[in-house]
Amino acid sequence: MNKATIPAAQKTCLSLLLDDHRKVKKLFREFESVKDDTRKEAIVREACMELTVHTQIEEELLYPALQEANHEAFGDMVDEAVVEHAGAKNLIAELESMKPGDDLYDAKFTVLAEYIEHHVKEEEEDLFPKVIRKKIDLQEVGAMMVERKEALMSEAMA
Image (cartoon, rainbow, N blue to C red; front, side, top):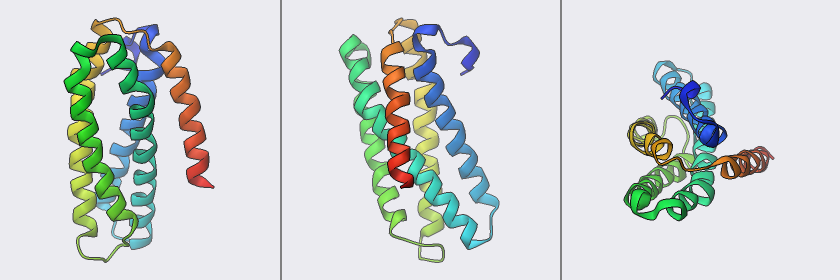
C-alpha cells in the first residue's frame, strides 16, 4: 500500500500503522543478519515494545471504530486480527522473559516475525483497502491513535 494514495479521511491513521509495519519489518530483517547477542537483544526488545504499543492502539481505537462504522464489513476481519494479536502477545511475553542464547530464543523471534508478516499482509491487502473503499472517516481516530501511541511509548521507555 502506498501512503500517497490514502485519502485524507484515513491518512493519519493508516500512515501511522504503515510506518509501524515498516519499522518492525526492518527490525526483523536486521535480526536475521546479527550475530552479536547484545544487538540481538536490543532488536528483540525494540520490536516487542513497538508491537505491544501497535497492537494496543489498534485494539483500543482502530478496531472498535471500524466495527462501529460498519460491523458487517469488518467484524470477522477485526475478530481474526485480535486472535492474531493474542498469538503475538504470547510470543512477546515469552521473549521478554528470555535472553539471547536461551533455548528457542531465535526461533521464537523468527516465528513472531512470521506471525506479524502474515498480519501485516492481511491488513495492508484486505483491511486497509476496505477501509478506503467504504470511505470510513478515521480522522478523529487517527489523531487519538497518534496521541495514545506517544503516551504508550513514553511509558514504555520510562
